Every structure is written in C-alpha cells, then in structure tokens.
Amino acid sequence: MKRTLFLFVLSIMAAPLLGQTMDTVKIRPVKVSDNIYMLQGAGGNIGIQVGKDGTFMIDDQFAPLSDKINGAIKAIDGGDIRFLINTHVHGDHLGGNENFKKLGATIVAHDQVRERMSKEQVNKLMNRTTPAASPEALPIITFSDKLNFHLNGDDIELVYLDKGHTDGDIIIHFKKANVFHTGDAYVRYGYPFIDVSSGGSFIGFLSTLDKILALVDDNSKIIPGHGELASKADVKTLRDKLVDIKDQVLAALKKGKKVEEIPALGITDKYDAELGKGFLKGKDFVLIAAEELRALMPTKK
Ligand SMILES: [Zn+2]
Image (cartoon, rainbow, N blue to C red; front, side):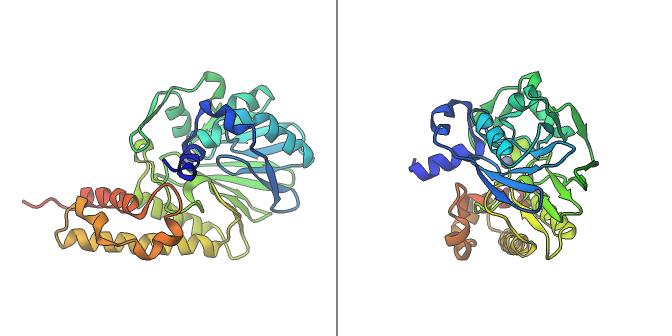
C-alpha cells in the first residue's frame, strides 16, 4: 500500500497499535469564534467551547493523543472538560474517551453509539474487527432525537441526523455563535465513507447533507469531521456532486446495467481529480451507491 494511502486509512479508522506514529502528531488549534476552537491532529476534528461553565468538547481522536489534546485545551484557556460529545462510533473520533472520562468529563452520544460500542464491531470494507469498548469508554448520557445544553453563554443543540455515515450520526449546533460540528456526516477528504457495516446508507448520506443544509446559513462556520473549516456553499457543492452521481448510477441500473458493471462506466471521472484523493476511489464509491440503489429497485420477474 502506498504510504499516503496507508496513513489515510489509519487516520480514518485507526488503531490502538499506532502509538508509535502518534509521537510526531502535533495538535493545531484553529479559532472559529470568540470561545470556540477546532483542534486538528490525527483523526477527526475536535471542537472545543471554553468559558466559565467549563469546557465543552466534541470528539477526542486517538487515545495516545489525549495528553497533547488536553495540553492544547489548557493552552487556549480551557478549564476542566465538563462534557465530551461523541459525534459517532468511529475510533478516530472517540479513541480518547477513557482518558477524558478519568479527567472528569461526562460523555454524551446518540443511543446507537453506546449500543455499537458495547459490542464487537465488524467492518467489512476495512476487513477490521473492533472489540467491545471498555465500560469506562462508554457514553453515560445518550439520546435519540435532540438534546440541548446551555453553557458559556450559548445554547447548544445536538440533533440526530439519521442513517448516513453510520446510524448514530449527530450534528452539534452552537446557536448564538452560528457554529456547527458535523462529525463525518460532512467531510473534506474526498468521496465520503458510507459505513454500511455500522448502519450507514448512501441515500441516507444524501438526506443527512440536506438536513445539514437546512440548519446552516450563509454565515455559518462548519467544523467538518475531517479537513478545514467549511461554509454552507462547500456542503452544497458536495451534495450536488453526490446527487449527480446517484442520478447517473440509477439511470444506468434502469437501463439494465448490472451492479458490477457500474464502476467501469466512468460516472465519477469528472470528480476523481478532486474527490478521489482519499482512500475511497470513484469506482469504490459508485459500487457502494449501486449496491444500495439496486436493492431498492423492484426485482424483475
Ligand atoms: Zn467516521
């Protein structure tokens, strides 16, 4: 495997055996608003809101990075971490749970995140099995639809997005600051990963992007699951490309093409230079889309 691809797969799915490569990771703070920051290191973007009520934290990357992350939070004047939100179940977003719980954080996530963490998880695409998490790493507050926090002068709403990247994806909305953290329901690494093994869905991913677009406005600042800060226009651009891909895959299936013939049709050629930089190539992505779209079509008698 090429080194870049190897590192990318690690950064996405991740692994406890990575202690070594984590030594060189630096945590980079990006100021988003008066008291909200994005922290980038390895794995998913972290969101931090600081203030007199204590630090509100979103996602925590990998366990070997917890000390560095905590140091970066202290450096931006964050006090003790009061709440830690998990945007979804992947290890590159919640690998530090146990460490932050020891520091006193109360961990919060969607019901499905706790449910999936409590059991062994098998990822077919990555050919990877993750054992059940330690009880110390589990969220102790879970919710199904919406949950509100009122901290540090802002009203913060957690909204369930439904099945998309996984089946436990939420968006976090800082209402006064007009800042959002989307988890991996919106990412900037290329073709988005639809984790079907964790209840994700291609059609669902499109509808979660529509839900995000309905919540944000032109002035919103969006912390994506991976990549640099984004705007509503960035989300809309990705959504339009994915809808175009869906329409073309569906049209080909309706013409009688078999699922396995779809990747060779060149449907994503015009997007590959930009979106094919990640670990999912256009051919992989259309195959995920085609399998799901075919299953939804009426079967021929
Ligand atoms: Zn993810």
